[in-house]
Length: 184
Image (tube, rainbow, N blue to C red; front, top):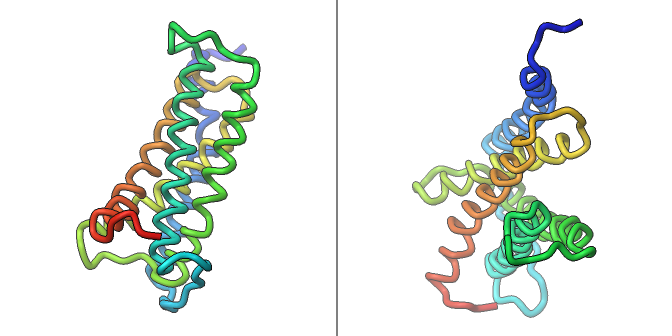
């Protein structure tokens, strides 16, 4: 019979997902830093520039992430005046998928065309948020199916994913829209 407390055993189940997330974040950062930026990007018809495409895709991602946050509160009964609808779990999962899918072309462009940069505080923060977001996203996805984890694990890592994406949006899309208006 084990002498460890149940919370300790459950917390130990976070080690592999945490290591995987850390490796993803570090790999993205190292690749972005040492990869020779191509400064080449593909534009999408109807948009004025690749930067506009990235800003709007990131805005789509953050909009779905806000829905993720609200739907998580509803699913877990944290909005007292709202009864949990039967469809909320499915909508929550699909909104997360759409948010990540919208972010992938942006991340590929940032890594391949620009790399990890640090020429200003905003750009450094953006590069760090990008690595952090995908690292914590991998961690969250790995803990979703693990049994016996502490109850706090999923909300904390979900919150960290939301924080990372929000930081990315603030240091890129908000900056772009503040300097260029809501242009396409």
